[in-house]
Amino acid sequence: MAHTTAGRPATVKHEHIRLASKRTPARPRPVSPTSSPDDALQHGLDEMRQRFVATFGAQCDAIRVLVDKVAASGSGEAAAALTQITHRLSGLAGTIGFPTISARASDLEVLAGGASRGAFNARLARTTTGAIRKALVKDLAARPVVAAPVVAAPAAPGGAIMRILIVDDHAVVRRGLSAVLADEFRGAAFGEAANARQAIEQLRENTWDVALLDITLPGKSGLDLLKELKAEWPGLPVLVLSGHTEDQFAVRVLKAGAGGYVTKESAPEELAKAIRKVLAGGRYVSPALAEKLALGVDKDPTRAPHETLSDREYDVMSRIGAGKTVTEIAEELSLSAKTISTYRTRVLEKLGVKNSAEIVQYALRNGLVI
Image (cartoon, rainbow, N blue to C red; front, side, top):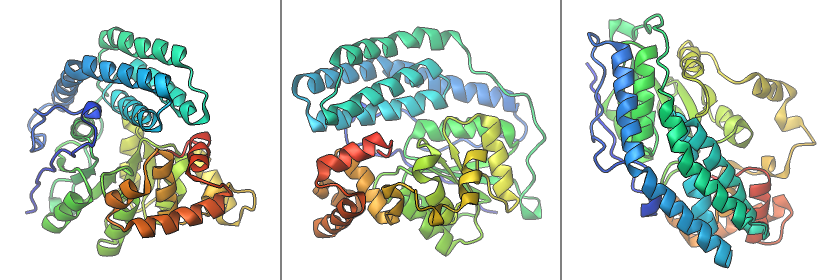
């Protein structure tokens, strides 16, 4: 019988944007078939919320420092860091039941994007930072809702329990997904991976029924990992679960072999529905994306310039849009700086822009920043 091993928490470049507690257990705890799914879900959410609250003040302090730095100098590095921390905070808060914090962090992320255009509203950014801090009281007053019990998940071939591999660079998000899906898929066992290397190790050591894959991973991107997974394990259903909107990556991941694309803002019921759909051999997309696919995006002459980029060019463009240098991107992707510069040149040509600053503006304007 296959067994489950745990992923290790990802190392985040900036200490002040680490949202997961150092005390997060290194080994996931599969839900026992004899335990109550409702109790397991509530316990998991409570644990994650407690960790979130414990580090929330420090997160707000770090955000305020970055806001002041951007206001004082308009620093591209500070603006990129502010965009990153607010993007991650918004996604994490939304995942574990802090919707008001998530919404205010998203508002600040938009404001941070204006810095590259010289349109950073420091006063509004400081007000929004204060609103993020105050939002904790409102969100704490609303307990997470436990979904009503559903029909048990189908067993894997041979009567074995279902095995779900979760690939995401945030330990707290992985734990949250495990807690939510434990209620939807009773008796399921969960494995974790924080990056592409750990995901490959898990897949070679164990047998999985489905993999949930984030797009933004440290090192090798989720899109590159997806292609590798489909090449080595063509029969493995893969559902991409991302904090990015469908317009950014959905069509690309479907072309690369994913069984579906779901955003992290989706309800647990929608995620469960998507998993069941890909397990049955189908594809799961939203009605809007289905319409876009039906129109044939490859044949649409009106498509945006960034849709003409190759997957690697798109990845490089997104990282430049996040304020990263050629050297930083080369290190992250384990490629030479010369190779990244070549991709950058192609991006400039296809987008019709002149320099990296204009790539940043284009990416922010179209919501393409990783």
